[in-house]
Length: 453
Image 1: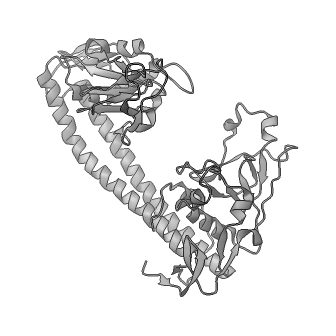
Image 2: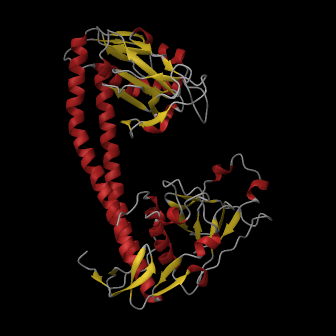
């Protein structure tokens, strides 16, 4: 930030912003802004908007499916250049809280609408409130029994009010910088997507064709896997895998401390976070499956999530929710080979094809175990395939990890930059930047992590 200099600061009485530049005003928001609901009772507006982690976005016409005009009459109308806040369930720190309204439209009546003040640059105050969001200030203010904030609570918060020229300069600067940061992040995310696709292709090719040279193939008669090495077996999954149905209930282990894996703990890449440690205290009928070393768990509910995790060495007292099939390999298959088999595109295509349901497609155990899979007949060949896969994955994973680290650093930089600029800790350059309209201005709001001071 060589183009930035520090402002001369004075102390404030705001806990989360202890210093502000000389010449900036400090007032409670209620002296600057008004909040008012305008309900869409006469269907004055049909354009639906939504406050998301990507800011305020247009709803597609198809999103109205299931809604009737009476539903839309309960929404409230927002105008361009207004601010919208979702200050409900503040214990949830991973949700959107503030957005800048880019067009006239309707949103939930539970949201807080802050009207435009024509004497202020509303986008500057969007950035300032977004800074409070990313530092979890709303959560701290609204914590306790309420876990929510009303419009009066919001407007009672003290805010910084720079001169209008400074507001404009800050908005132009942050628009430009956040656009650059977001473009950088999008490139890195696209790189990760491409590398994941290459990883998937390498796994699927090795699992379906093997690694031996100059071998003959045979036809399987299936769309997803039309040919496999001639010497491989092609049988139902149940021939190679046992469905682990051993379970723990409150009746068998009352008040027992267990590690519990739910669907939110697992992604296609494996465990997303540590299983929650909990005292098992649920109804005896709600059994949970025991996970042992060598087991692979696969989501059978919402199969499109492709939630898969392999446990080479499972912890003691580890259980999985009933939304998973816990699969234990038989002697004919190496546990890690099973993991790669279940992760392959051809197997997951079959799972999704046999799943039933639109919103929550699910596959039952019988259908799952009946899926045909191609297996090398010897453990030696399975081991060679595992080694080939992991040699390639190591290279891809290093590049992915580097890109993920760069993304995290970019997000931290963006959050830090917004905090320092909107609070006046850093002064934006004197050079004026053109007021460019960015299509994805609110992309800044997709960052869900906090800036730690």
